[in-house]
Image 1 (cartoon, rainbow, N blue to C red):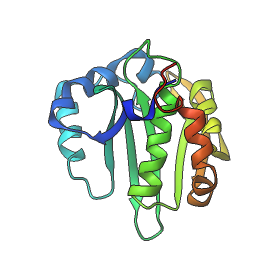
Image 2: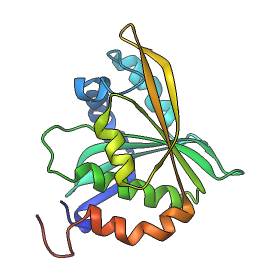
Image 3: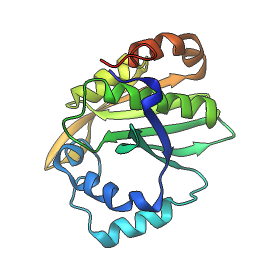
Length: 188
């Protein structure tokens, strides 16, 4: 478990470009993402350029004690209806237990407090038990189960759809913070 003050969610910077490509191309990330082919440097360059200043998306890096270790994306930002979709991953293997929870908590704070969203949606492959467990830990509710919705490596896979609402965030944010971070001044 991490101390809150050791964790940061910040906008993607040009210096993150090579790390993001390495993370996106790593097997642990690719096996759980819709885009699972090896991404070429040229393809990544195009994505990175389009991500900078995108009006309906926000791309963030999660840093632990100043070291970038993960990524959080908020896409389909609809300010009129106050909703967006969240995707995330940890790009570094062997991180301490609780790192995903810390990334998740800061992502919720960003979506609801900074972006001022009312609804945050997310999806996970049904085989991705870690992601499903994290969504449930963070208080997301299952909104749907899309059967055989996506073909991955020639096999039809199910998708689990999740949502969390601002009113839930307001009621459980303090309990979630205590669940996701060690008490102030301690490190476990």
